Amino acid sequence: MKCSFCGTSVPSGKGKLFVRKSGKVLYFCSSKCEKHELKLGRKARDVKWTKEARKARGAK
Image (cartoon, rainbow, N blue to C red; front, top):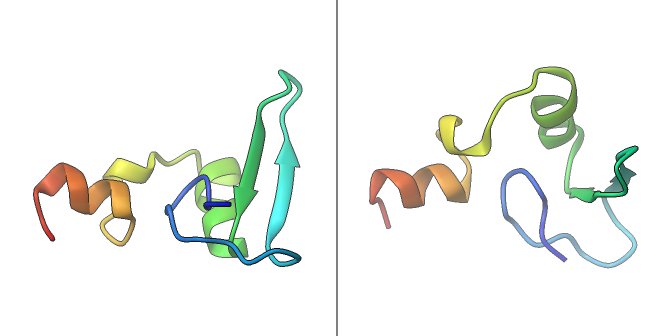
């Protein structure tokens, strides 16, 4: 499975699974990703170190 925020792979048995009231399931590889998504409300494309941001900027 992939981290819902940064896009890195999460090994089986590691990370956190979060279920929203709407039923959407989110997987997080670290507390850093969890905090950015849930507490701070940031979008992955706006945070430089995520795969989605690199793709949006056209970086490798």
